[in-house]
Image 1 (cartoon, helix red, strand yellow):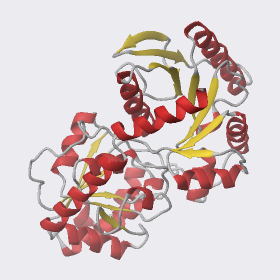
Image 2 (cartoon, one colour; image 1 turned 45 degrees about the horizontal axis):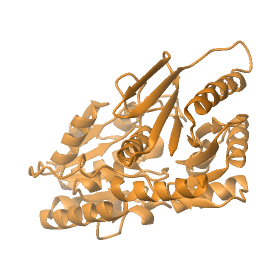
Image 3 (tube, helix red, strand yellow; image 1 turned 135 degrees about the vertical axis):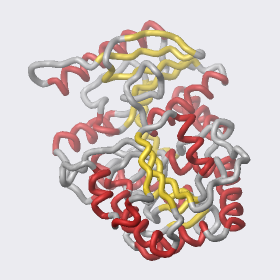
Length: 378
């Protein structure tokens, strides 16, 4: 069996920056290779063309091309020709593509096309209550309706996407996975009263609510410190830096107790998770977040949001707490409860890792993917 992935991101030194989508593909691809599955990864939108093999995976980095007109269409057709040529030469059985902005709209591929839902632009616009470009909706609808098979990383995302686009096809749910050997407890004692947020610094991740929450935490626990690890993103509503908006919300006392690390390499992210006493991830818009799985795998108790996909990942009161990020007082109370009760935090952290190992470890999820692809190809 020969499977391929089409993606705008992949965590590799030669690639442009990558996020959770790239990480989930990397986890799956590396495990499939160990099962003697041939894997090819097409990474589009890159700075230059590169073709190389590494760790049993064939990589095609495809340069972003610029056109005078209809670039959105012409680049898709360029990708189509490129993929079809490689597909025929190397006998690719199926190509998996993301749903984001409908990259496969207008493509006619020579192999099975599977779209995995990690959240379309339409999906996130609905969750965030913001307007969407009609072009993006149209592209995503065409791509989803043109796919041979549909996957979703959570039932919530699949159901919501079906509703948005009036889809009739079956949607198979297979979650994202995390490498539980790469993300595991280090055994070091967490730094007391240290709170960590990691991920993009952006409104939809609940960071502006987190600023208000931290003001409340600081009033009751002046020794608390908040680490903000991630890339600052321009705010979609104001055009300002999200970090600047965050700092405007903080009061004078709490402002000096926040540390900003910027984007970090994976090794340093794991170090920050290990040192934190409590992880806070108050996101408003996710499909099935890698950050949650990584923190849980490292035996960390979380205080997360309580929206949609949460019940498929977290177990309220067992692996952590799920709170409406806009309920600042309750959110702060739950963080303080974990900061003040090491035994509870440790108990929840162990339950969190157990949950991940049983349901979201790459070893478990790769088997679900293999069974799915063997079925659709056969």
